[in-house]
Amino acid sequence: MSAIGFGMNVTGGGKKPEPPIEVTKGGNEGPGTLAAAIQKANEAKAGSQMEIVIQTHISANKKDLVVRAQNLTIRAVGGAVITHNHLVFDCRKADNILLQDLRFEPGESRPNRKNPPRDAISIDGTQGRGKKGFWIDHCFFEAFFDLSVTANTKDLKGAPPLLLTVSYCHFHDNDPGGNENSKDDDTTVNHGSLGIHGAGSKNNPKDVDQETNAYATVCRNFFDHVRRRSPRSSNQTFVHAFNNVLEKWGSPNAIDDPKQANGMSAGHFGILAAEANYFYADSFKPTIEISERKGEAPRLLVGTGDLVNQYRNKALSAENFGKPPIDIRQEYRDGLNDKKAEIPHRDPMTDALSETIKKEAGAR
Image 1 (cartoon, helix red, strand yellow):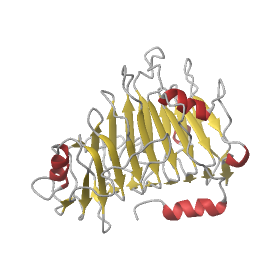
Image 2 (tube, rainbow, N blue to C red):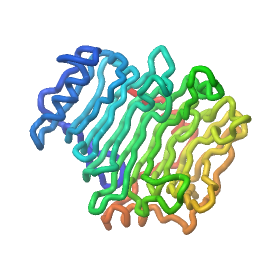
Image 3 (cartoon, rainbow, N blue to C red):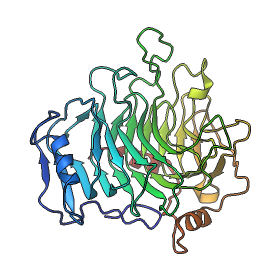
Image 4 (cartoon, rainbow, N blue to C red):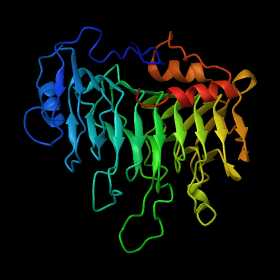
């Protein structure tokens, strides 16, 4: 299988990986655990094609599980749940990674600042990056504390851009309000789905990466009662979001805190192309938030013609803020230094397509 978009060729462990590394124990230490499986993959010979198969529920773990392997697939079978764990991918070595059919849940207690981890998956491209990238497919994410998936990059001379595809995933939040006004138990949350971030200080426009160093394709995902950032682009990263379904986003307390009532967002010099998505609100809400901070220049291109976004049930339509206008194909080609780079196929959004995406998204 190949990832969607950018001419990527993410195959993970491939069709015929080495004998699978089986995860049969749910603890955090010792043989048969997820930690041991990742360590074994990290220590494999260069060029190995590997697959980690999770066969049991994984218990909560405060320690990061750092992946430095290449040509690796991580998948779960039998409905196995990964409870309150944090997978961190060190892009100095980790590359050509496929994550499939994984289910992340926070467990019985809501994580908070004093109870890490905050995210389910972090992709660290601030110190180096490979040429193939990452594909997250048919996974389920129940919100922890902050973002379900975070990708961070930094301008690095000679480094390829970070490539990421997220497809057919189901993002859900059973507590989108997140007790954000609580002052006693420090459970103030950020709650979001997917952030593609470059380096730089949001308080200093001059301290921003000046090159687009991450390209993300976000397609056919179901964002279900998620508070915000489904997805978000910032710091010169380019996010192409198409054929996604967003339903009833925003905090229940959005009237008191309107900044928490966005579906997608682009800010702090982020670049977002949103085409043929389906926004279904339950009250008047903006679908896409564009930062208005002085000195920033986020760009937004919304679909037209057959690829127009669908705004339903009081969802407020988004305007095109492309200044200058964004040519998606040229953006890809320039950033990837590949004159043959093509944008992925997008379908006109219909009610039937939105229902199909909702049924197919998430772990199978």
